[in-house]
Length: 345
Image (cartoon, rainbow, N blue to C red):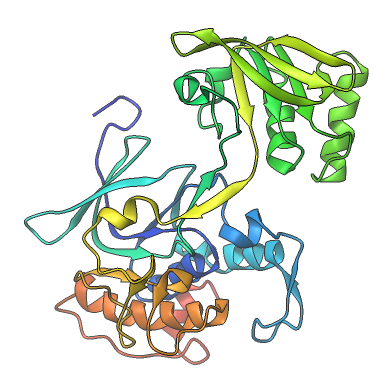
């Protein structure tokens, strides 16, 4: 095991996906004293709500006539604070294997290893996969010079960085990497940005003071050898030119794919995971699926349906995590022990 991850992480439950259903599962499991770790390929919690429509209003969450995706995420994070769930963001679960004692060994693409009694797949429509720019030969630079997410900022220290995109991710990493990069250029196809106005203002301030460059144009060719990028040909309204860079971060959006889950031996139905409607367990014992990634007769792809699924899943999970402990059903409105867990005075 590497120095970065010196030990296997042992836990009661691993939740794959930190969208609304995964977050609410933390609450339902926490009420039953089940400890959780959450893994998500995105670099922030909230899943589709935060990544694709943070400001889009949602109208069918019970008791909330209108709430944005980001507001819902923020409220769920506040709700699960008492349970101390651990988050592992910007990581993908690459492999799953069952141990002789019935637990599962999960390994992420960042090298972390988990031993867990149950697995809850709450990955929405699947894992988010970055869209690859249509640049010939980009594959040979991926992982050495071309990155679709920033997992270790030190990889960009004292480098000549080119960031391509006009959304929040492009702007956020422009602001975060500018202080440590040797040089930084942000390129977008037009001088209009989709990101937060405050971030746009900060970026333009850095450009005005000569601390970074802003280029309006598109990348057309990559140049380098042995996986090491040296420069990029770009096309602007003034014609073609070359930008020296040895790190390229293209933020072209995300697509949804089932990803490694498809290789875990689960029964699948058109890239969805069939489950029962009593426990929301998959064809593999101790592996559950909740939210948009599952399917069953009468399934509705609604967040509120995923919340219901999380509640029933947690009841079944308790029997696995605490096989010798009788589960007494309680209401948060009247149970002093549940209120104590929630920090209610």
